[in-house]
Length: 123
Image (cartoon, rainbow, N blue to C red; front, side, top):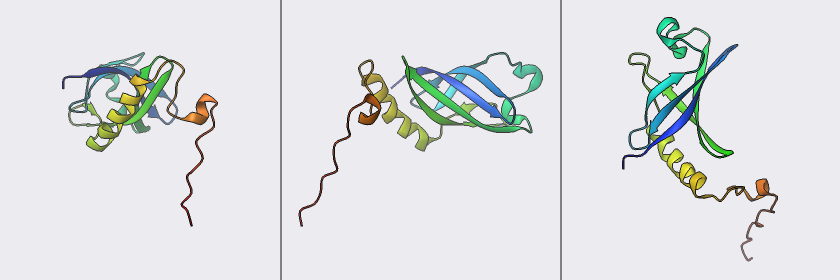
């Protein structure tokens, strides 16, 4: 499967947030074509190399709905990627995200519906 999806990337620093975009390869977990917004990585280096770096996350969107996930940064290569475990979970969450009708949610309580009561075992 050769499926690449556009994502937003957020590098969290102690007192600053750096935003960028990229293309997530759902087959490998690699993130390519990272483009920073208002940040010069050539001059300043990767956000993950800074002393005040905390973590990197990503978001996959479909309209107003989005799925967030963790991103790893390889400091030696500058490559952004998603771990295999995170990628597996993300694929399931992304499938739900893209199969929902507008305004639908995977959580009944978020759509104003009551969650189904838990089934009780007979005594």
